[in-house]
Length: 146
Image (cartoon, rainbow, N blue to C red; front, side, top):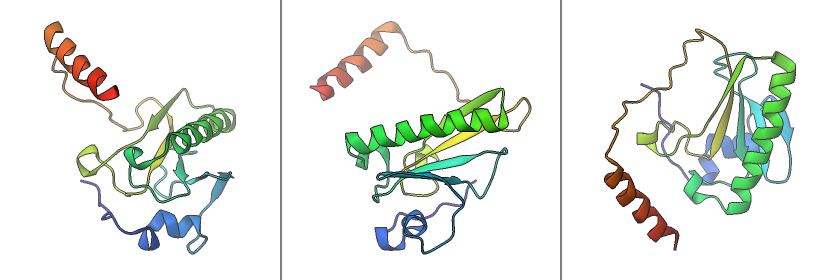
């Protein structure tokens, strides 16, 4: 089980401190809204984290513009990781909330180069609900979308 870093005010958030330059980071890319830096826990060579600069705990706390900026940076970094390390695969991972396996409660994306038998497991049990159930779920979401 991962070590969870409790949600905290922006002033004590480890990523906020890193973005502010209070703690060291191996930076890869930076723009007005995002910072990309090497993950200290390198799963595979070239494992980069992309964080938004403003403290926002999860995807749901971002503005649409921040979400777009994070994806633009992840796309840019992923292309560079491919050029630098030539991995045969790449996983883009973003977790929200403890139950979603988030371990640092500041929005970030993992840009993770992948290789056969690298030990990374991303699987879940399929539930295969009936079409009527899927239609009900979709209706709920469409209603919430307005």
